[in-house]
Image 1 (cartoon, rainbow, N blue to C red):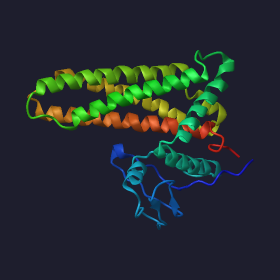
Image 2 (image 1 turned 90 degrees about the vertical axis):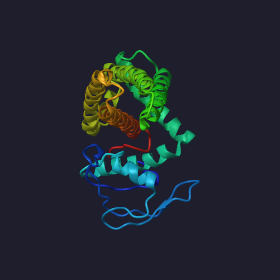
Image 3 (image 1 turned 135 degrees about the vertical axis):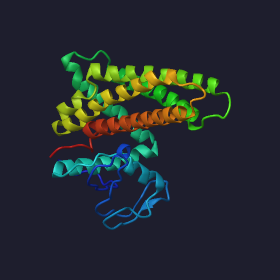
Image 4 (image 1 turned 120 degrees about the vertical axis):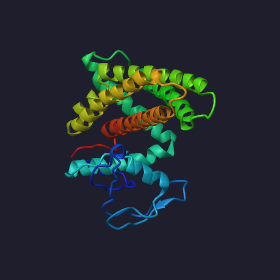
Length: 268
């Protein structure tokens, strides 16, 4: 087995969960590493909270962007490599996009012999990008709309929120349904059986997302322009769902890359 390429690796223990209001603790030490084309760096820190860490990086760690594994050499190495992937995803580089598309293509190629998948690798990669771009576009519009409740013209604002949320709900449910129907992450467990718990957790989150989205869909039509407390509450609920889904999509992407890229997710 070829040694893994050097990457900025970080080791963490425990689980971070912003939904419950928890805060993670950074454990271990970090070597001083500078990102390409960037003056930011992570300096050595002692046991406890990170110091001198860029705000964007710190917030992503608190959001649980990278799952923390409890132990084991394979799991520790996987998590370290996925930490390196997280650095690549923030660079938005062509190399990361190519690696992601390659992972998707490999996922489909593994599935094709069974005859259960209708799209080829390129079609699936294009479909994933299109769906994620649509959902991301609607998410941005919806987030901007609910960020500030206007003091006047609540009726028009409410109509816009309902319309945008309907579009978001339709695309998200379709996206989840197609993933569930086609067993999108099944090849991950076939190639890396030790990731089966992560796949199960993400699939369980699909059902939770649908319940949260349906609850908002049920309550939103009954809110009137004069219901100021309900307006604020529904905005917070929509914002939470949007953030949950964004976090979920990032975890799926990292899981796929960790399983199918050449230098990540390898098992001894």
